[in-house]
Every structure is written in C-alpha cells, then in structure tokens.
Amino acid sequence: MLTNVLLYLVLLIIGGLLSYKGLIHKKLIRKAGSLQLFFLYILIFIMGLRIGLDRDILAAIYSIGLKAAIYAVVTIIISAFMVFIVSKYIIKSHLKGEVRNDS
Image (cartoon, rainbow, N blue to C red):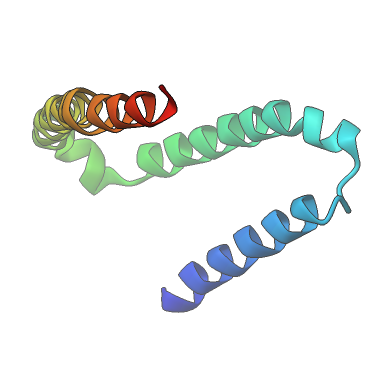
C-alpha cells in the first residue's frame, strides 16, 4: 500500500517537473482535461463492475449508502464553513492590509 502511494507521489512530481521545464508539448497540456475526464470515466466504470461483482457490498448497500450520504453532507457543510471563514476573515483582512500599503 505504501509503495502505491509513493508511486503516485513520484509520478505526480515527475509530471510537475516535466511541465515546469517545458518538456511536455502544449497540445498535450491543452488536451489534459479531456484525457483526465476519459480516464475518470473508465475508473468509475471499473469501480462499478467491482461493486457489482462483490455480493457483500450489494447486501450492505443500504447501510453503506446511508453512511456515505451522512459523510458527504457533513463534509460539504464543514468545507463550506471553512471557505466562509477563510474568505471572510483571512483573505479579506489580508487584502485590506495590502490596500493600505499601496495607498
């Protein structure tokens, strides 16, 4: 498991460095969003296949669904609250400080 995470991290760093150095063709960079979306669809499809084949998950789908819905709602509420706090107190106060320095 740790080796997979390290592999993901190494690939992310290599991709970032290649893009930073300008070694990735601009056409590929422009198509990166489309490629990501294509592979995301494939990933979701494969995950659906694996869920459909696993009888234990199918038997527990209602309790998993309820827990997932609660987790999603709580995550959304906390994320929205944190964005509100950061934008209201940190970003605005930081911008006001910059404006005072410029005038």
